Length: 564
Image: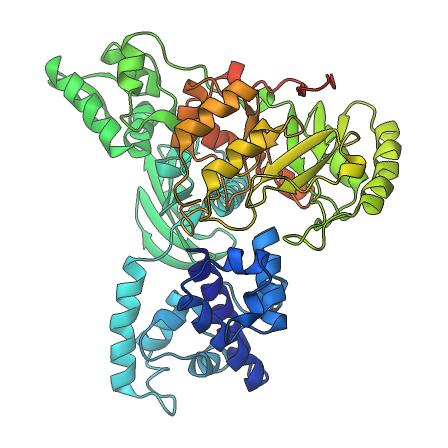
């Protein structure tokens, strides 16, 4: 799976370079590299660790460095540079039959095509058919492909959804008074990704709200506009608006938040009581028993309000009936960030900037965990660089006295379960975050178990190795054994809040907590701004039924000594 993931990145670099009409030999090199990885039987991480990667036909020294960088950092500089200046959704059009990078470049330069919708406009207006080399038949075929792709467009990552929803609410709120406007759907339930964004606004002036909504900054296309409903494209994403009567807002919010399975259970309970629930309220015959607030809906069927993140019909109805709904973790319960990187390693900000951000976020503790220098991560900190970093940390401790700073290190778990913590500083490193960075299909369970037996290891980071909607995780990982060992050794498992990871996933984190495993929050941030991704991690933790008590991460206590 990791081979296919990197193959896709190399292919995207080739597409971007060809789109920019750059050196054809570079294009060919990346194209060959992508094909080589796609056909490779061995795990690329194993080949890298055994220094055999350049033995693969089509993988030269330069591509090997790109691959090593991605395996260590989950980012590839060559990919980022190749994509510079290209609209984010433009190369996605290469999925369409009949479009190659050079033809797409013409459409971009001559017709201003930047995404699926601007391409459709170019087709509908006849401009594409009028271009030399295209014609009516090509335009007709492309239109069919566009319509198919529009149905299956990618879902919106939570980080992007958060930015977009905040922008919409701020802009709409600057145009008119908003009281209680809320985004519903899978976004409100804290899913890792969501489809269309559904905004609910309580108001008696539906047409006025819709008009303001369709005039928001950034609207690329108005898809629908009526008296109570509107739909627009912003940054290529569909945002839908529903204006509902204030007295029905709670019922509508419950209905449109979902999930479908949760709502079905609510309707079944209501039916047994001779009631009917819909987006307008709870009814006995023609009498509306309530719908102003969500609590009214639940109260009508003798249930307490259920937090939206756990409305998935996975035991929340039974827990509500029995009075054992979890008191879910909140932002203020998280007192520290135990996984951040700085410019001493592969981050973009210095130690002081990261620590000041921790203070701004109200944290009591932060762990600086740049990578150790190793074969897997050659750009990591040497012993000398780590000791030099200690000077910056001591200065920052004086400058920001309200935050406890742990001078830690992120280390790799090798094929035999050993960690690459340098012996010369092993006793000085105050927080050891261990994770697998290579060999994702090779004895992963045994390696992690061995690492947890190491008294220096405080936390296992990104424990399952999954990348949201791209990589399922380490092959053959035996979770129950991990949970048991983590509990026995008092080794924490990370709740990694980086949007591409969210690892542990919600369902696994719930099982870990039920097994008594200690959980620690980490943003895996490379900049102060990325530390704010903790909000996404908290949403995932809430979906995992993590309670406030479980989320109140106290100052860490290592098994060798207390740092409190």
